Every structure is written in C-alpha cells, then in structure tokens.
Image (cartoon, rainbow, N blue to C red; front, top):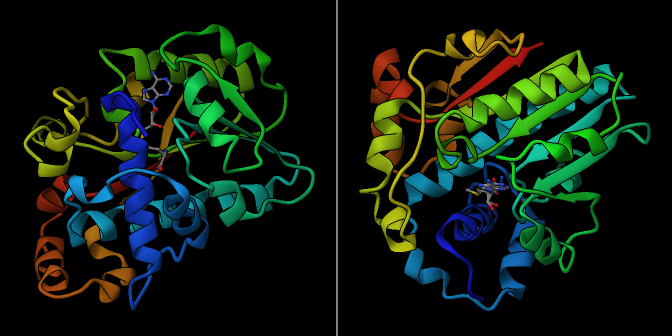
Length: 263
Ligand SMILES: C[S@@+](CC[C@H](N)C(=O)[O-])C[C@H]1O[C@@H](n2cnc3c(N)ncnc32)[C@H](O)[C@@H]1O
C-alpha cells in the first residue's frame, strides 16, 4: 500500500493499536485494529514503532473513547464526528446507542480505503476546507473527537475547522490529544515520523489557549496521561520513566495529554 506522508500516519496509529492488542497487558485491547492491520499489505516494520508509541497511542485512544462513551450515554441523540479518522474503528469500540449518528471524516481517498475494512458513515473531505460541515445534522448535541490530527493541520486551520463545527452544532464537546509546541516541533526527529517523512507539525502549550479561538470553547478537563492508572500496564523501563515524568506537570505536558472542552 502506498500513501503520502500525511495519510501514512494512519498506518502508524493502526499498527500501534494492533500491537497493543497483542501485548500481554493490553491498554486499549482493540482487536478490530489488529484484524485490519493483518489484512493490509504494508511493511509495518519500517515504522520502527517503540513501546512508548504503542502505549501512548493506546492510552490516548482509550481516554478519548471514554470521553465519547460518557457523552453519548448522557446524550443518546448525539452526533459524533471523528475528525481525521484514518482506519480507526472507534465506533466499534464505543458501541454507541442506536439514536446516535456517527460520522467519520478524512480525505476522500482515505474514506474509500476505510470502506474496504469498516462499515461506517463517512464524509470524504479535506478538513482545511469548510463546505463539508454543512452536510452534518445540526441542532443536536455533538461530540467532536480529533485523535492525532492537531499536529498535521497547517497554520490556523485546526482552529478555523473547530470554529465552523461549534457554530454549526451550537452545543457539545470537543476532545483531542494535545501537543505542546515543543512536542510538535520535536516530532520531526522521532524515528517513526522521520521514516514517514513528516517535516512540520503544530501544537499549543496552555490547555486554555483554545478558549481564545472564538469557538465558544471552555476547558472541561486536561488529563496528563503520565498519571493515568493504566501506566501500570506499561512494560519496564517505560513504566518507571513515565511515573517519574508524572511527578512534574510541566514534563507530563510534553508527553500525551487528553483535553476536553465544552461549547
Ligand atoms: C495520525 S492519523 C490518525 C488517524 C486516527 N485518528 C487514529 O487515531 O488512528 C492522522 C489522520 O488525519 C488525517 N488528516 C490529516 N490532515 C487531514 C486533512 N487536511 N483533511 C482530512 N484528513 C486529514 C490523515 O489522513 C490521517 O488519517
């Protein structure tokens, strides 16, 4: 399978989730990702994925799933929008109530690829454009989830996309995994990201910064994942290093954090 670097990142998260599900102590335990990865003709070894990436990806996905599950349980008529969904089977993991409408959004060719592996309601669109938002239902509470997407949208396009979505829906939540500016800058030196060829990424330091995006967001929660109980499932020496990082909030923010906003 051949994808450009931006799209190829979806194979990285898929592979990490598949490896987690095959580990002795899975964090996410996503057997669907393992099945899809096994069906894809791609040399996953070239991604040189390390335990830190496997555990970090599985843990952030689990926390984002938890946010989605809590929202749809409180709002069984919700609309869920998974931005930059790649081949992530989040709807299968979350198993929302029947009244929920779920939309997976990614580039049109990614959505076409996705349809070969997953039965899902997709919108094929470039997230940096705006017209696609109009095809979503409105006047219903919305759960917007963006996993592994923020760094790859250039300039202020992530903010503008969020502005368009919150104006469209009026009420709901946005959940994403945050990257500090340093974490985003240093991504290009990560062996896996280097192997893919990504050269630039975006982030923000202060979890309150999105409150200034004029998208009506209020920070509801910042979870520093170095402090999550699931760190107990990390293999050594990663577990020990992560726990030491957890002593410092500033250091923990350079790792994975999951952010939840209300609008
Ligand atoms: C790191 S992958 C994450 C995939 C998935 N969310 C997951 O966690 O497994 C980033 C995804 O964002 C998508 N993406 C990046 N920029 C995009 C854009 N401008 N429009 C639509 N999708 C985009 C890529 O195609 C890819 O599927």
